[in-house]
Each structure stands twice: as structure tokens, then as C-alpha cells.
Image (cartoon, helix red, strand yellow):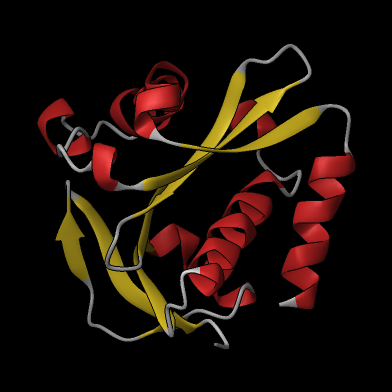
Length: 156
């Protein structure tokens, strides 16, 4: 967990980015913008699947750039499922996704979740493995994209 905390700290100390703990009610437009670009436009996820009606009950993290424009999101449902992790293409590879994930993991620890889980696209499995997640399912399709369920203990 120390390395994840370091990633959040380094992003928070980077004047180019702001990591914000938020709610759907407070940041719907910004969160929705990133998800629409990444999931609906880039990955061709149908609108009806992206907007699942669960956002109001989720905990959200938003990253904005120096101009306060949204560049990344992630959410955690009340059951500990992390999802809707998205970073705009031009901002990938800068540690932003790791910082979003670390922030959500810290919230899970504060909420005393023993473990969290997610449905990872196959292309993202290595990313989540680097952050302590392990695959615990067979491959399945979600929105036409192959996924596997992954789990991680929080250390509480």
C-alpha cells in the first residue's frame, strides 16, 4: 500500500493535476464527460450499458488538469466493486490511473472493506496485477469486451 500512497501523493503534488474525491451529484458533468469519451466513443460501449443508474450510490474520484478540465475517473460501488476506471487517451502513461486506483483503495480501507473487486478488460489485467489484484474468474464478455474478475485484499 505504501507505493500506492506514494503515487497518490506524487499526483496530488503535481501542479498539472488535481485528484478530487467527489460524488455523482457534485461532479456528474465532469465524470460523465470522461466516461463518454473513453467508453462510449472510444470503446463503443452502448449508452444503455454505460449509464447503469448506479452512479448516485457510488463513491467517485475525478482527476482534472491544470485548466480544471476532467481527464480521468473511477468509482466504487457500496459493495466494494471498483469500476468505470477511465483516463483520456492523451493522459495515459503518466500515473493518473494508478493514482485514481490508489485513492479508491484508500477509501475502501477507510470504509473497512476487507477486499475489493473489479471486472478488468483483458487489456488492463497487467495494470491491475501491478497493483496487487489477482484474477479469480474465467473470461466473460461485458459490453462486447472480454473481461475477468479480479480481487484485492485491502489489508484491514
